[in-house]
Image 1 (cartoon, one colour):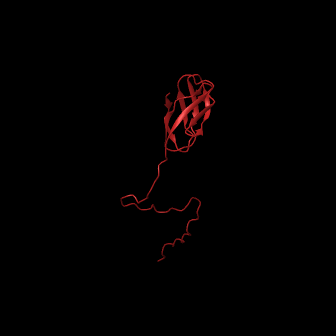
Image 2 (cartoon, helix red, strand yellow):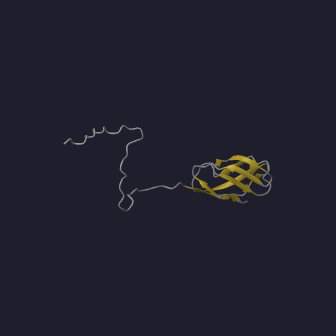
Image 3 (cartoon, helix red, strand yellow):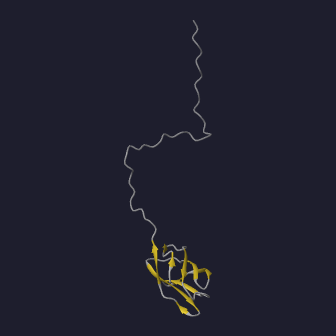
Length: 116
């Protein structure tokens, strides 16, 4: 029984479709020990929202005829940034400009031309 996609986030929420035969009236789809939410079901497919999980789990479909053979579903952890370091190069902060609407510094009065 194929599963597509065969992987998803550890947080769950992936839309997954299992295909095969005799899948009508599916009452439960399990990913390991957790139940998935069934969103569509026909005689040849069951679409679900994968629950959260970790590692590799067996996905199965239960119908009035029994429980299917297990297929592997792989949970993929999110990326982790372990360190932060400055970028190479002569980077400098941009000069700060006054925010829009900020008051300008007072102007000095102009000197008039010299009299002779």
